[in-house]
Image (cartoon, rainbow, N blue to C red; front, top):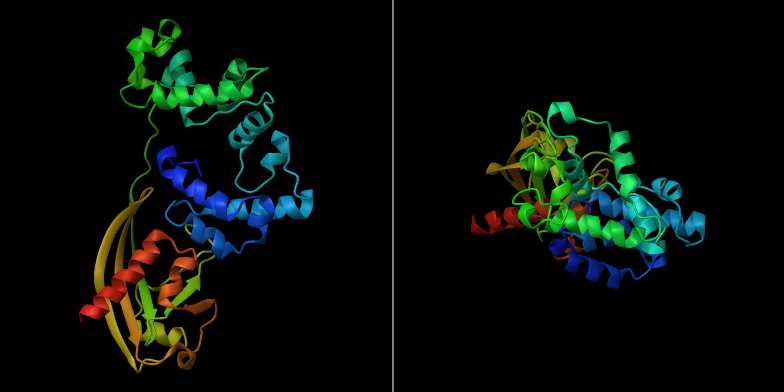
Length: 318
């Protein structure tokens, strides 16, 4: 949960998640939808899917016993070298080197590396630097300390350099170049993308959902349908083997713009509301009808849930 998400956001989710899935066996028995529903609102949903797959592997292939080496942990979904080392050090206090964003920043400034062009070093050299500082006898406390030091003292902006106990040996501080270390990543060019989500309701506001592909954003998650950019809504319904009668169609009824990573997304919402029940309409391939009141149990992304709620509100005001 702490990958790319701050502690303050994670705390409440963590407590609820552990209460619902108290051990690896409970997590393995849970459905993907239950896990995603418990994760709802945290974002980066691939983490939840990887966690679920990892629980399954540990139960089926390791008899429920958690791997204890970095190499074994790295073979599990979503666990890289730094995360694996963090687990090994935190749980068993074995010497294992971490290199997360906070640690990188501390080492970059202290050693004066990976800032301006003439200070660049390779990833392998960065790991060697990190290893040189890792405690052999108390990796657990050292790893926690250097992460906290980066988060609370050697911060991205407004670091506490004047009070820092490492200041006398910090290359960046001694050369008055703290803001230059580490060098800022060059941002990728912004790409513009237009999508046309289509929220389909039956007469009781049961919502038609489709399951996304196993790769990409929101992989394997349930989502609303999507109309092709050059397809008319009526033609889209026919493509989905849905009727074009007994339906109220609203094309591009709402426009929303937002940014995901380096993509500027323009979302043009289409809404289809049938006045007949879902069982009469049938269920297209790779879709399902879900009662509106049950949507919270499916593990939809926040953006998808907001889209469906907006569509319902727009219909109720027309």
